[in-house]
Length: 300
Ligand SMILES: Nc1ncnc2c1ncn2[C@@H]1O[C@H](COP(=O)(O)OP(=O)(O)OP(=O)(O)O)[C@@H](O)[C@H]1O
Ligand SMILES: [Mg+2]
Image 1 (cartoon, helix red, strand yellow):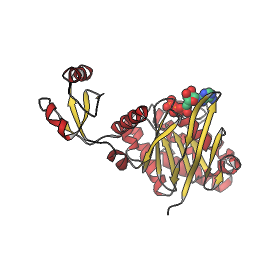
Image 2 (image 1 turned 90 degrees about the vertical axis):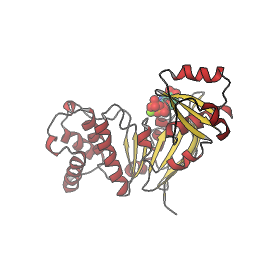
Image 3 (image 1 turned 60 degrees about the horizontal axis):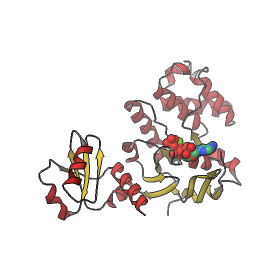
Image 4 (image 1 turned 135 degrees about the vertical axis):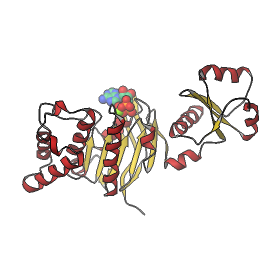
């Protein structure tokens, strides 16, 4: 069996009377990419901050490469790279100076330091810009520099908290190319994202909702749990069309707006009653899966 890099047992964090993370059990295989998805405020950053030893759990616990989250929080810091949602670069330092600053934090000196900085400049494509002021870099470059700073010490585990928020699609792709490479080289990556297309490329995905892990599986297996047949019905006014279905008493397993369409989930015997509407049978996306899990949870 593959080695488990990250493991939690009923990991819980409360802020006063509010439970931000509620008894989460995670197991992340070494060398895999684990996507952590959930709406705003669902507890993603709080979970990651506990795993990095920045805040302590209120209850439960976990381990990183066998090191205990609470007892071994200091040695854990040498094993992990962490890129926070508001990544921390010094705007008034040059690209190289930022890397030098982080090298100092990780106790990298001499030849080793030079080698690692050179490797990070090359990874981020920043060799020709190392003397530029960081403030002048665009979002995508800053992000790659921040990644470089967070993995200078070559950590076996990398936590990325919404690393691609607010950057253009090309930069997002470049960033993911780097993530894949790191993963192929054996780094375990846990990444939060709002982008479902990014999540598709993870080995495994956890959905977190109101602090609880409501699903945890491979993207393909998650899609298999959706019952019935999924149809996409284009409409200039999806809400109005939903109302029409209701008024006509048309039954379905589920129906919800999806961009400029309705997504309609039906049992095979319900299919015929929608025959007059333009439609396309589709495979569920991870967004459909998320809707399904959230609704199932609300019903339970
Ligand atoms: N230090 C804190 N004190 C009080 N409440 C907090 C604290 N940190 C987080 N929370 C609350 O805990 C909940 C979970 O927050 P968290 O930042 O983990 O969510 P998130 O899933 O990362 O959201 P986003 O997608 O917006 O980044 C939120 O309701 C937030 O307001
Ligand atoms: Mg967050």
